[in-house]
Image 1 (cartoon, helix red, strand yellow):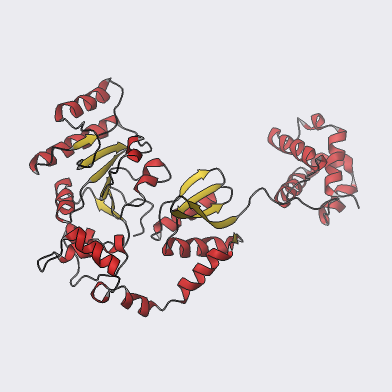
Image 2: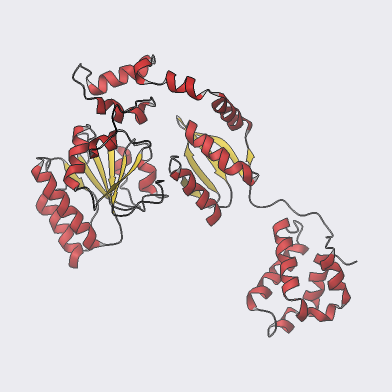
Length: 390
């Protein structure tokens, strides 16, 4: 019986040009490429072999010059050489950079893999940063690690022993024991308590909502005594760093009031990058609220549009409202356009205590990576974003 790869070479010798009227241009192009690969020292991958059999089967009637050889070979296919290893590494390891450790996922970033990343985010994991076409990174945290292993283990990924050791340790923890250990009331971690004391200037009158709000930043448990009802309470008792605030239900003024009450300034505003007109409406809404709250000083909007039409109106509004303060430690409100981030954000010590995004597209870009370490990202839009589960 003749091997499938030798069958392909017989088709090549017969002449691919003879099939231009019977076999589609796409299929011929793929067959030519596969013929070159089977002659190369590296041969083809298993997936490419399946593609070749599929094309030969679909175009069976056009290859009758091969006679019964084609039928027999397709019925029980075999090959002259072993398949080469796939170009898809499918590995998960821990990657260290400076003082930070990250989960490194190496694979071809197909739409299927991108959907897995989206599901991880929906389940409360961090945003995934695409480093290149075959590498993605995310912060090394317990929840990220568990979600990543659970998502990719069924896909036959090679997961490092270090990650599996962490995974097994976390899975071995008793839920009751962990919940009790990290309840704020019984917390004995002096470093966390000292951080809280320094940040909140603790006293008997300290609002319980401030403790609730900081639970994500300092990784402890704090349960509400009553069901949250006001926007401030809903934000304080959020279950992850991302929360959806329906812009058709809550006024922007109420959102700013809530963040001020929870001591979440400075704030980073992320504007959508598709509509100059929408950005103009948002800057007018922002200006109106900031005037009411006496927060017009120390505001910087760090992007501009072309000086035509609504773009020119937007630029003039920034100048008129004096929202052009240089970014420094005193900046209370900073604004950027989604997908772009000025380099000076990385060169100053300024960090946002909260993020408000006017777009649901804050993911897989420079802006989202910069926001990743923030414990509060508010999606202030009229539709639930994909990264948040209902």
